[in-house]
Length: 248
Image (cartoon, rainbow, N blue to C red):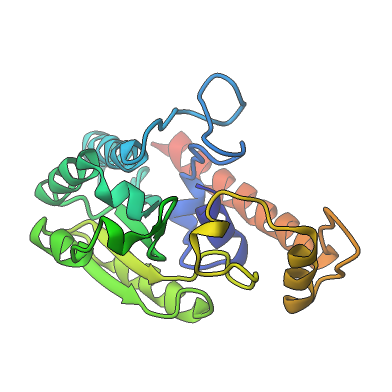
């Protein structure tokens, strides 16, 4: 869930409750991460749709844990489960079954972000997938929102996450309409789905977003500083939670 880590980094929709109980499930390896091979990876999501189902399972476990151990004045478990999924995941039957179960269980602690970029590895999704995904989720009993300019509307994304967190009796799905390969010469095409950009395109993208096109693997100081600031906030939140747990 690298995208959620980035949302944390920039402060979008993140509360102390989420920081105190934050677990990162499958982000720090390239491609398809596998449990037991890389530290920090808890589950192997496998084929499309299974990661979606994993997220529902984690939300169920969190809700059950909260229901069992929280007491008046001691809200130990109050966090949310976040997951990003795309059209490929939405096409698979397992995600439909998991979404149905989540709606039935009224998992208000579950927030899904749907990357609606209309591209699969075979090209435009219209060749195989034309259903209204949001209507399907509405039928399952989910709270739905749509951020139409998902490439650039960061305030809209933040507001959608905040609103989703306010809905406690339904799982939430936020549809982000985005452009795959945003900024590259191949943006919006299947050609950027699983292929590395060519050298000239990489330089072009860097220039477009204000980076030095001649430098590689550079982390700007402001990003490093923001990471450190966020780490300190997380450590403080964890200490606060540990003190509550000791009292409990």
